[in-house]
Length: 196
Length: 82
Figure (cartoon, each protein chain N blue to C red):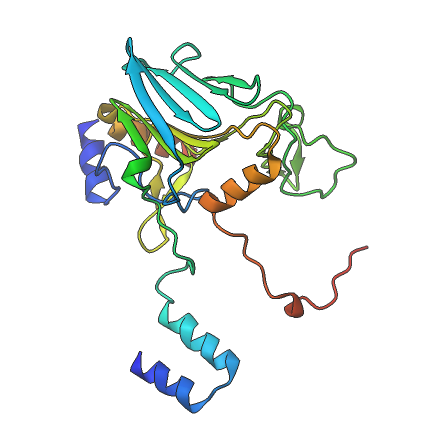
């Protein structure tokens, strides 16, 4: 184990600070306008309350469905640590539709389906009828200062909780704020596109 | 940079202007001013947990037991090469 530590440091895998502060494959921007929120601690429970959400965490506990919860102030939406996706997630997409007939986009239902021998890389959507969605960045790769690959996320857990209730457009806007704007070529460069 | 400026002043063609900008920033792939480091005012750090209030309805949740980081790195790396 010690040998790995030394090797890790020598390869400049940044361990400065305990948490992951680098850009990752999914998240490039975290310096945003800071929303108003309050924090308080009582009976060993940390409460973070924004205008719309309340997060509660039992300090010094490992994350569990008892120690970490988030609830909406505006609805009955409630999330506990350990829930990875909402049952009524509005679903994302897959890498390829090649060789598929009508196919479910519910990742749980197409785990063993492949396209051209490769995984479909199914991803869930950022919104759900349940009011929340989760992006798990724990195992993503991180970038160095020159936007080049530099090892994996050093956090044990690194989640982005989207608690937007039914404000779906806001959820997409918030994702774009942290994930970066979608690269688009100018419309005049597109010419005519068609598909059979 | 002086050379690029000269090009721009000599030739006002729009594409050349873009080309000069592209060359000048070629060491960085990202064109926009992103910063992965959150404003400290948005961060709540308690022990091994860190919460970052990125937006009213968007919260980053992290857990990092520092003593396991090297081990974890090794484990992850062996996982991804299999």
